Length: 557
Image (cartoon, rainbow, N blue to C red):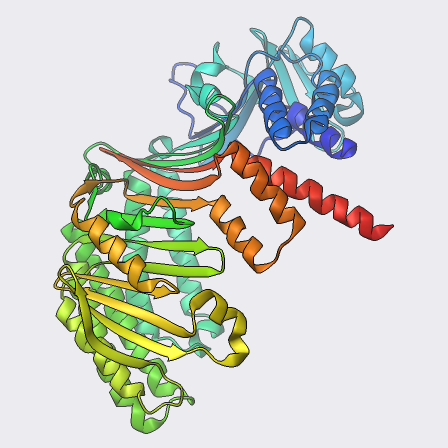
């Protein structure tokens, strides 16, 4: 652990002093600095405080103390109150990177002394610039309380007076963050990237692997042309892309944010704006007692809907070809199978043509009980019923195939169809969790389909439908995935009464905050997806790691 911390903290200190990709000259003095990328690292003081918080919650406070101890020596000379960063600027068809590190009084001399073994003896090359490095040469210049580092001394001209301004609010919001400012990438470099991508695809389509593969090369070429056009459009209309990792003791969570935005007035921005104020008719999936819930709501522009057509057409043709070519499918069954496949794709295509996706899923875990459900809106529920019946009729002669009972009941405007099959004796464990029979219910309405299964499939289906019916057009995020650790662990305990699991359950019952969530939020021309890990999960992971390690130690004696 000690050597790992030394390496990690040493890398933090020397990152800016050693890392810089191949590059060209910096922007001229009369030009405004327009970086194409920036990287932000929060102040050492804040970062160590957050590391200390996480290690305390995980029950590993000693590791946090060790990190602070080594940081005191390895970061000597660095101002612990200010962030570290770097920025990348384009020039002459290339990119150059300049890193900056905040300095204490005489900080650069201290850093060069502490890390002399890695950085070597500095060499004065004029203009206040020092050449450093043993294996990889870099250049460093002190200016305004900062050490600026680049691969070439020419890159250290015309440096910003306040480099922190380039980072915006990233150091305050995240421990580590990076931002790609796509709008600042020169047109010639955009074209170069797109041309390289197109060339790579063409090479693949003409390669022996593609010629020998079971693909329609002309169809693949047409689809690829469309996809490449979308990528080119994305590159030209994108504004910013950012990723940020943050530890927040006050909020008791760790977050990873991934954001993307489009240029004002672009079709990309308009597509993003369509996701604002999303509403769902399937809020019943968001059961508070469920171990996992999912909600997806999305709107597509007419242009997006139109572009989906060729992809679906290609998928339909590919499936038909695979059925014809499969040695496992009897020749006299192939046309019948394709006869079911066609209407299924018709339903999919008509649903895509509506331009809206609205649905979700739920997994409910109780001691020795598994139930699940998923579904959403469709363009033609009656067509789904026909596909279901055709599929069952096609396979009814197969030994052990489930039995279908049509119209076994109704819930709201959904007609319920029941597919069931006995679980074999050899599946005793599955019977314990799912019941003696595997039961799948299809709730099909005029514009919706919900599939439910498991031990309490009828109760779960009814609950979802009834909750959804009283919360129509409920505001929601375009994407929301919630995973609750406590019910998962309690179910696991019913499977195997493991002492480690028991300890984790006790820990979460005391602390709560047991969720991992992935939520997307839309703005008029941007989209941000947040992965959040609550404090209770961090604590449980720490407890589990300690218990597992203790078990290994006992086993090794």
